[in-house]
Image (cartoon, rainbow, N blue to C red; front, side, top):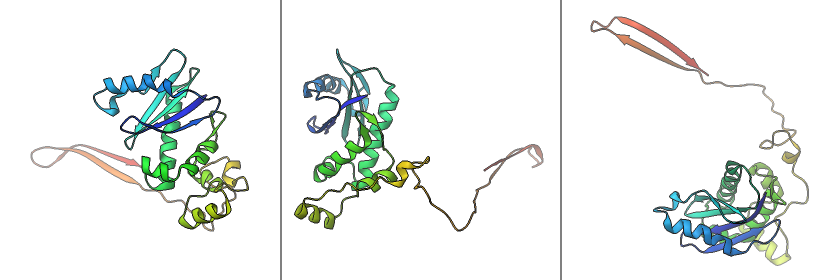
Length: 206
């Protein structure tokens, strides 16, 4: 589905690219740059652009453009949702979705993209699952990996990947089987000039 992903900063420089099915030349981004120059604001760039051989689908987050290259027709909202998941994951892992944060953790970013897409198709996009496969970076872990040539990738398949509910780890048990609900009660009333009720409606929602 997704052939390539380009990360473009506010100045229009491509500072990271990842290819899955085949390497797509950076020249495909020229169509995007033309649309960016015509737009008044970065938010006004069309999210879907058609080129002679590809479709360009992008989002704008944190002064960065996440630009995906698709060769065949796919539901655009599906790709846009995935790009937002990528941005959310970067935000969750590094505390900031910015060019500096990505450049400082470029190896981890590539590892995440490799797990999030399998041959161009979304695979693991839940933060709960990803953190079991690729451990979030810490100063100590970075030093150890540098000295030993280690990796942040886990050795076992996370339990959440095997669960029917991917955002929750499998086999989780709680001591109390309790559920809490908030009941919101709203009253709409029409009063006459003497203060008497003319119409009273009560709404309850859980």
